[in-house]
Length: 348
Image (spheres, rainbow, N blue to C red):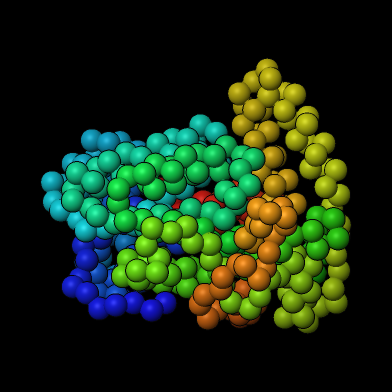
């Protein structure tokens, strides 16, 4: 991405312990910015040093401990009455369930926007998701609601809508290596995407700060190499592992049946209502491409989906197989293949 030289910018980063967030924080530091990340402790990472090690964030990035869902903590522990030039947010809900989505994808983002403006922030880069083009799910509607709020805020904004993520398309690598068949919905050609790697996405998000062509724009973005169907993903995995291709097709009707059953149960119990939303998310990703949607035709358009970066999904698969890369498993999985719901790896 072309940039113009400027004085270093003081940037507050939210969601820096997720894969896209940590890549963005590192990219901002490489670009010469002063980077402050608000993070939470807990679990294995029970202190700042633990968070830094777990997220592999370099010492040049300042970590502050707080809770982005708490407006008081955000101001007291994150901003501390100081001035910042820009806010980069990679926040996303963990599950995509309605309550979680509206609390994080809209509520926490909205609070952060207000606090950032108080701190003198003039610019915000938001990690959103390309699937909001066709908003059928709660998390998509929550993301769109905040996108509109940001656009109307008066800040210079860049709303980045990536396609699919490498980690979300890597859940069946181990299946194939163990000699099991690759699972497909339908014949494996119902959908396509242009997946993007974390580092390429991080560079793109960081570059939005200094690139006027990215200002006050909604920016769909994919990785290099053209669109890829699930069947092509499986074929390449078999080639990399030297195994004979074996596929097992899963009918879309199976997802529909599960969704309908859970929706009926959800009328009686919130627990089942939440599971019904997860079933709707699963069906969405099984049947909708992660490409730019042409509003005139209602079709997904690979040619209209921009590409950036250098690493392809198949490069990443090769690194997974030789052990030089790994995938974190923190979200729910669908038949062994994690689904993003808008980079839910970029956690609060």
